[in-house]
Amino acid sequence: MVLVDKKILSGGIVLLVIGIIISVNVNSTIPAGHSGMTEEEIIDLLTAEQDIKDYNTISGIFMALGFLLFLISFGARKKKGSAVKKEVKKTTE
Image (tube, rainbow, N blue to C red; front, side, top):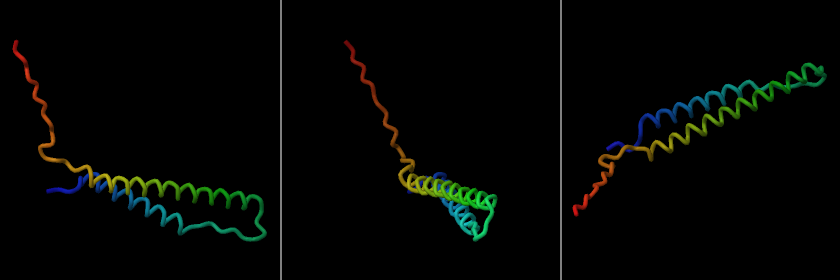
C-alpha cells in the first residue's frame, strides 16, 4: 500500500533543495562596507544588500512551497475503490 503520492513528494523535495542551495549561495557572499566609501560605493553596497534580501525572500518562498508540497503528498494518496457510484432508482408508475 502506497502511503504517499510520489510525484508531489519528489516535487516538494526538489523545491526544498533549490531553496536551501539558493540560501547557502547567497549568504556566503554578503557584501561588506568600510569607512571612507564614496557615494557611488555606498549606493552599490545598498543595492547589493537589497539583492541579497530579495534572493533570501525567493529562497524562503521555494522552501515554504517545497515543505507544503511535502506535507500535501502524505494526504494526496490515491485510494482504491473510492469512486462513489450513485445508483438512480427509476420509479415505475
